[in-house]
Image (cartoon, rainbow over all chains, first blue to last red; front, side, top):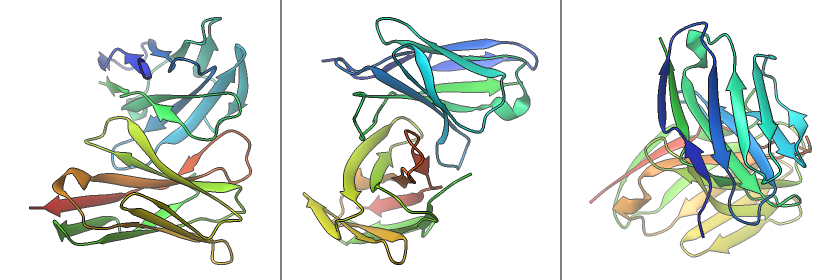
Length: 112
Length: 111
């Protein structure tokens, strides 16, 4: 049983570019959440997707957008990248009423 | 903003010793969870304690919750080198679906 998978594992971009990160949830999970973790900090909630809709959003600008597909996989898109967007981006999945999150290994994004 | 704050920021102990880390939070919660993160990769869920519970055990882990003080503690008994990791508390803070994480405690267990 595969857990949460994320791709790519590492990514280097330059300021102003756009990036798309991908996530496949754990089998049986229909809810996907995205978190941003800066170096030395705890994860910060970006948004959560359920039934292909954004169910809740954290304090992130509109440059951050997402999508959930019918197979429950999800994408995180970030436009007009800033240096401050450099971070580990974590995807977590759960059943719709689940409280415990299952995390992927993350995508390390570096913006130069 | 971070809801929880872990204390200490860093902890270094020897194998066999107990490790205690604390978490304080600001608003009412439904539950509090502890997660572990190895080498800046994905987080692994350790234990969940509900607001009406005061103590919970799972293997070598013991978690306490004091809602009147808005604080929790995680005790790892008989630590092993493999316990070396960062530990985060996370609260739902009644905010719906988001989990609010603290900055974490970095635990180093030396042989």
